[in-house]
Length: 214
Image 1 (cartoon, helix red, strand yellow):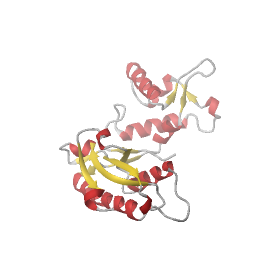
Image 2 (cartoon, rainbow, N blue to C red):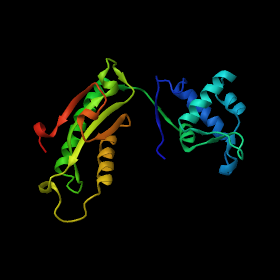
Image 3 (cartoon, one colour):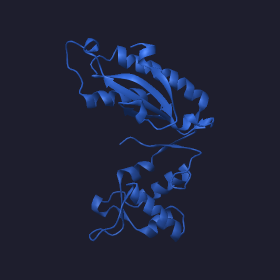
Image 4 (cartoon, helix red, strand yellow):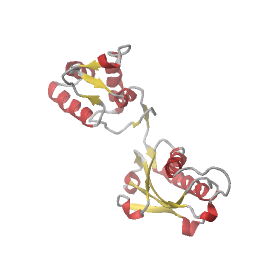
C-alpha cells in the first residue's frame, strides 16, 4: 500500500500530522506480531495513545471508524481493529506545503505530460481533451496542501492508435494517465472525467488539445 503524505501545517482529524503519525505508531506497536483476529486495541488504549480525554476519544474513534481507519467491535471481537489505512499513517511522510510558484511549474510540466499522452502513448485508447486545475490552487493561498487536476479524456481516434501490437484496455489507459500526472509530484491529485462540466467549481483550464495540438 502506498504510504500517505501529510502536509505539515494541516490538521488531520483535528491533530497535527506529527502527532497523528506518532499516535498511530503507538497504537500499532500494541499489536505487532499478533494475528489479525487479535490485532485489536481498546478505546482506553486509543485514548492514551492519542493523548485525548474521554469525550475527544469518542469523537476521534467515531471519525476513524467512519473513514475506514478502524474496524468497530463486534460480538466476536472486542476492541477496534487496525486497518491497513490506519497502519499506513504510522509511516506517513510529513512534508511542507507546496509553494504556489512550484505549483505553476508543475502545471507547465503537466502540459508536457498531456502532450506526451496524446502524441506518443499510442497504445492507450484514451486521449486527453483538456485538463483544468481546481481546489487549493483557486484560493489566494501561497502555500497549497495539494494540486488538484481534472483531466477530461476521450477515445483516441483510429488514426492516432497503434496499428500493430496490444492496445491497453480503457481501465489500463485511465490508470496510465493518472500515474503519468501523479509522477510529477506527491502533491498532485488526479480526477478523470469525460466532461469538463463534471469538475468541481471554480476551476481554470490549463491545457486544451484543440488549441495546443495533439
